[in-house]
Image (cartoon, rainbow, N blue to C red; front, side, top):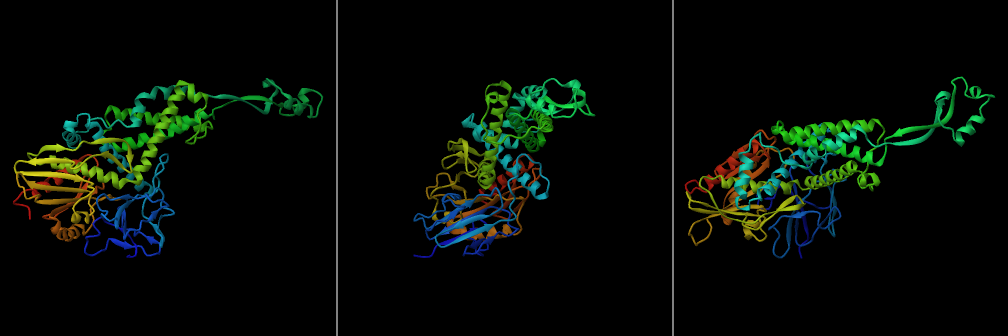
Length: 528
């Protein structure tokens, strides 16, 4: 039996790339990912042996359809680590190495404002992950009318203006429901009286206990005034207000989380800042910050996640609402942890929806069949949508073609599997019983900074030449835009390198360019 092979791939098409420059063989020495690589990483395993990553057998996500029938090879996506240290461990029966990725940003803490340039970059990356999540949740809303799912999704992504309210996130719900509760607690937060001992002027003494009396009789002098000394103070019982209770610690923890969630919400929806919903969230965020500072100034510490609620948190109406809302924000933070790890998977799903929306924009395109979609209540490694294949089927009357979009095929054609692409578009002539005319391969490539990569267009031209035996006639790479103000595009006759935004002009502009590629590819005179 051949020796096991373990490789790190920098691109999913590395198997068919002639130069093999995107394949790094793991031989026993630790690997450091170079600084100029700012995209996802894939683990390639061949000859049957499976690697353990970060101490787990299932830490990576297999690329659907790439694994061979005899299970001799597998390609899987490596999640983005929450922390860059100590790196990614990979081991087999004969290999034990660590992969260091120093240029990868760390998951930004929710309750802190970014300070350094690297922290700001990580914050921008987290905002993009949330924006992609927001676009995926548009599917959940559009599923209210399944028959018009793709029309509604296209309308939301290409036609809605700045006056349309932003999505109803958890923090937006809190802003409408909890603002009065927060005001009432800010006016009168719960406090307790604690008995302490301190030096008090004689005229203000209200209570003496055994400890105070013992201290007093030990002082020199015959009268009370003599025992009080020059400052005329004695040790006595004092009652002091104390705000550092569990319920106020929870209140402060909630306010800090809410203020940062409101900040992120407003940054994500800058173009819609004048809507009523955005202004409400802005006001709620400022109120939360003020109350958090007030509690901190009065010595209230932060509650840690996982604390057991006391009687007040369970039975006081206002504090119980805060407790419940705090749990909701903590749950949201855990969702963001998973979104951070599996950004590449969410990006892939978002691009798939974008491909279908772009095809729907071809003049005269008619949706003749669509797979039932289900929006999951919980993500599965960055994936929110359950579906069948083909995802959507269009009829193009001008070209007299049937076009299918297939996503994460389990058993693709053997030649197609080598390209490790999650999205395939195949098309055929209406009434032609000889089979489909060709395939278009689409690779969504998540990246940290976004933007196009120099030389990738020429590289994909060489890859596409290899795809002739698989009847691949065009290819597209979809990368994130650097900003939501614009998108970039490079194309040749059969290859498109495009940046896709998550909202605004960079979204609908990119979808328009993708529609043009599909139109030219599917037009008989333009197809090579």
